[in-house]
Length: 217
Image 1 (spheres, rainbow, N blue to C red):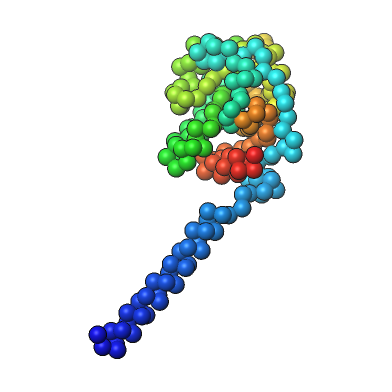
Image 2: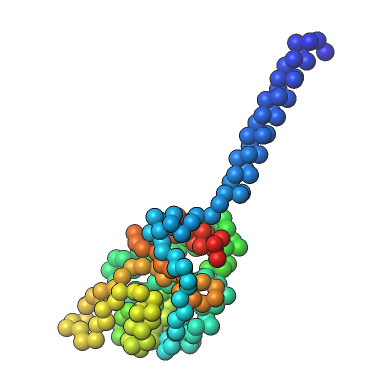
């Protein structure tokens, strides 16, 4: 081998070594990047409580007619949304975003996906019976859970989770709307109110927030 070929070979090896160092540093930074802080999460529209808050769940059943208790919320993260089946826009849009999130997590982060449950609590129990929810909630995702119950039980839950909600008890017509906030309540694996996410809601942003909450938990 002449000197020219040796020089070329050395140059190639040197370049490959530099590239390996750069790639290694990039991967290291990616794998060891610090989790988002609570302040950064707040800038993304998520509020994480310094001390998670305990709350009670009574008088609710799921869309299969089975009792839903506080124990149903332990052992996993729960993203809880308050809406209703007759909602014309925000509710189906939110459930659609949560479905996108669930599908993406199952493809990219299956371990985290397995730790997250999705629950929609109706704010319109007069119309949202078990039968109505059973045909509505699974339409968006068969793993989603719908909850209904007495209006007082639902109102008490919204008050504990800081969800704005105006109950409709004497509607003037059959096509009434229910005023409610679109926040997502986040329940941690201990079954405590961990925080909430404000709209506008986007599946990519929600994934980033939940990943950070899980890392900080």
